[in-house]
Image (cartoon, rainbow, N blue to C red; front, side, top):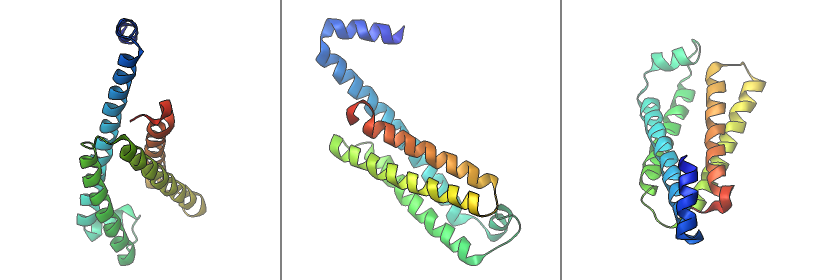
Length: 154
């Protein structure tokens, strides 16, 4: 019933009003995706940087590698920075800039998902890899849908 009432209101107001409402709704949904990604990135970053050795050993299935732990910490730093950027990009009104952010994140998350899927199929299979691969794929699909769906009007 919500969609029907929107269509009736748009018919009375004219097509331009409906387009503006759609753009406003798309922007709100993209802002929600930015916020979700930002909070997840910040949480992952804080956890990755602060995780003690025994936690990393547990996550790695009993083995501990200092170099891998440092790499995860560095990735955590990147996720913290991305989280901060994503949290603040929600305030940006420039649609072209927002489209470029979606394009960059689409490529970034697609490449990460492919890397994790490759690791999953060429090394030992882990539940963390499956979760990461599907989460990264979902983020890539989300940003791709905003960038290319409905003409990419953000």
